[in-house]
Length: 133
Image (cartoon, rainbow, N blue to C red; front, top):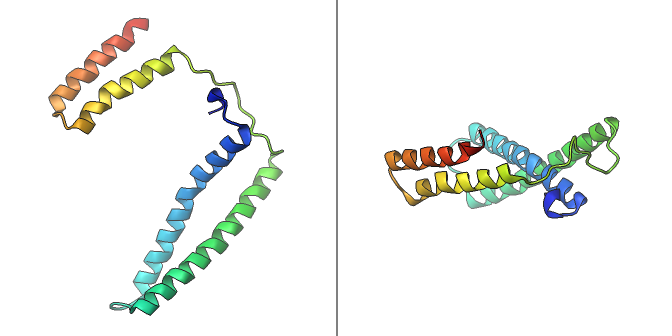
């Protein structure tokens, strides 16, 4: 994202959020499964609302603790507020060709073409991309 001039703090925040949102969803699913496995029959509307309120509070506490633990771990590994990259990424010809290949290969799948036609399209795109080799 730095290649398209998005500020570094915003990129770092998005990367961390993307990484940990799935972990938060997994924690919520585990809490839901644990509740379901301990309950018998259907619950009333009031019990359902109480369950949602409890799970929301529990998840908030767990994610806050996890965030603090992750931040402390980052500090112990030398994090200073700036995300350091191994090398500077630059968009090149191969990246643009991959985008074209991706559109050519997967757009027919979304349009509902059958497998044989998609295979022909993908093979043609691979021949086009192999002109560099």
